[in-house]
Length: 374
Image 1: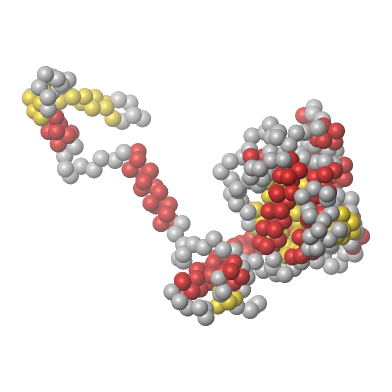
Image 2 (image 1 turned 45 degrees about the vertical axis):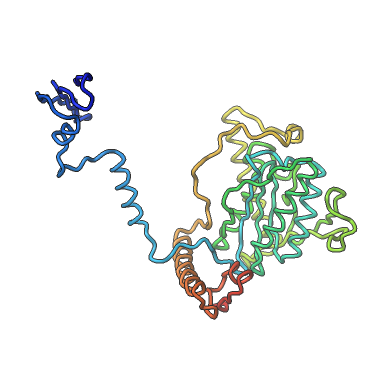
């Protein structure tokens, strides 16, 4: 121990070192005379000795991971927006609040504005379901306008429902965009069935068509719904807002060997399979569905009682076919490499450079040019 009577100098009578935590303590003692405190560090850790701490090891692991995951090109946040791509679009409410809880007024606003945006931006709707705190849309982006559609739809819908709720805070969560590309024709029906059966799999209602919120469950391909302009928020004197607009459920361009009725029957079968599986699960657990009445009594300030999964990856592609996923990932990497190279040339003054086909923002807002469709 040190003699504190002489600052900066002391008598070290015994120094004990402990190491080998996993193999048990090993003690070593040094009988030392009077010396400076700084000299102890020199004795215990000479200049040619590297002290490895847990922080040092963590830094080494991080450096190794960066080297292992290094990309040959500059990382870009852009993604290809290809006309004709099928997507599952999902958006969640702020803090998982029930800001979309079903009511006649909410359904009227959602249906009207969804129909207006689909018509303006040229997207085809295949299925839709608006849950209490998020929504799912299965669409085909026929003209490559998905970002404009989402921006327009989400922004005005948030303002309209905030007006209805008399609130002024943010409406949507700040999670990354969840626009999952449906890679193959065989993956489209399962994706649509997931959307329609979402209220059932959440334990809210027994059958998809009984969901009191806005949903296309039970609607056939080609069936239309007339959505009239709500009295809340939307200005009747605005000529750009029609008094009524038609919402159409369009058949996806998949499984062309099946007729519209046959494809709808397959969709109903996929949905029913999910519903029955949830029935069996609740029966075995001794639980019941919440029911339409209790869903309608939920307050928009409420949140789910379940714990939210954290630190998960946001998917960008979906397919049950492993090789389709691998091929799509390889094409995405090649597209990003071409985009990064074009962007570097564009930033140094190469305004004539062609960005890869599917480049969206840089072509619409920065005056760049995109290559033609391959």
